[in-house]
Image (cartoon, rainbow, N blue to C red; front, side):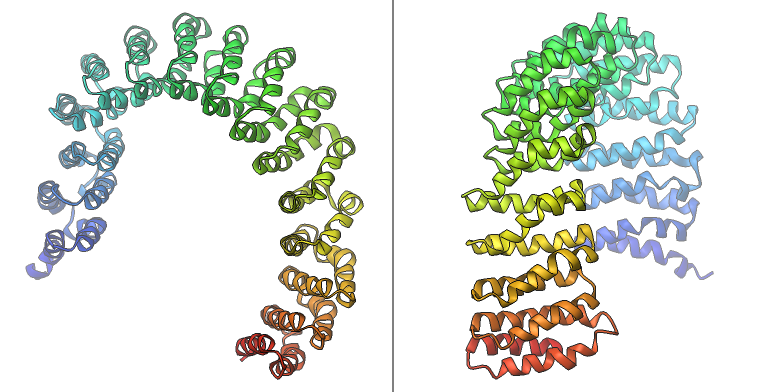
Length: 585
């Protein structure tokens, strides 16, 4: 082989890596695996990696890509026995200033570490860990915290002792960023050390971090508590974690309390049934009554999950009173979070208690002034329906929905229209036709245009839910009947409705039902109707063109109608018909 050809890939890479254009350097990095294959394992080890190691001083975007590529590079160097060669460039990347680059380098090092044998680990990985852990800059020390868990189980007992001590020093680092990183990775490290060291070494580190002066460190220890508690017995959890948990629930920083609230179900499962029932109910109640809305919002999201872990009596006596208070909470976000979750209590409480305790709360939330609260309740009604049945649900909640649908505020009516397709999915076609069908048609004649417009879109969505046959029998005849109404606004609504529904029905239905009405309205005396007919025809053309049976109708009926409209006396009618004619060409 010509040596010049052989050198070509590396020459291109070196040229592009040194190029002034960042995009070219980035492309070169993304093609590293191709170039490594061309060079072969030997030259990739001897030339490529040293070259990359020297080019660490670059734009963050390039370094980020490089850090990711190196994690999957072992096979291009000749297999795991050469994996340690990648540690050097990744060590340098793990110490740079940009956080995303460091995180990606740590991720890649964690991919490579399991491929190392014990001698590679002792000879290359452990010294790397020490160098990063003792680095002058906090950047290398923060990266080091993420590398202990991966290498621990492969290391010799003496090295493991050193690793635990070294990690302990990072937990007590002067820089809050390092302590934050240590708190982030403590849980993963805790799962690797044996139970004996967990109690003697890891729990004291957790205790120290959970009492840190910085709340940004303390809040990260919540997930550590979950990870460590999963490794201990209920008795050990009671001994070591009950007190810290109580302290965290009452922490002066709302962010720590928020983290506890957000992870409360995981914590409860980790510490075991007994502690949950004996000690955590009061803690949960405290979070549900917290003076910060963010904490109450997070706690509201945990209500059904926590309720599954305690008995029905506890729910009724302790949790439900808090839930009742939250229904009238001053924060709309708390009420919205509760509305999303409260239906999850229905399967736990059963039919009788749901009817007695939850339905009044649902009713109250359905009448909430904040739309998200109402939407969240309606979107989760299916869960309640499964417990108490559609009959009971309709008797108690449907009057409230109908009341909202006829609200004097048009924005409330508009909100209910948006919920109707969702309700239709949950209630089923028979129930819908009986209770809500007439309501949906009445909106088409509403005095507010936005309601009429939303009602036409609603009909299309209902057609998608219940199918074309249902629409053909139930909706389309009523809509078409409005096309001959003496009031032009009803005829206008007919045009809007059939245009909106056309994409949801079959071309045959469009041909047999919709097209005759459109062509009749071409001669309407009101110009507004006529130019909307032109717009409607423009929307119908692609629907009819999809099907070979209905495609001829475009030339036979729609085009002549547009030509007639293009000669209209009204400027707007002519404008929209010309626009539609251009679409037909």
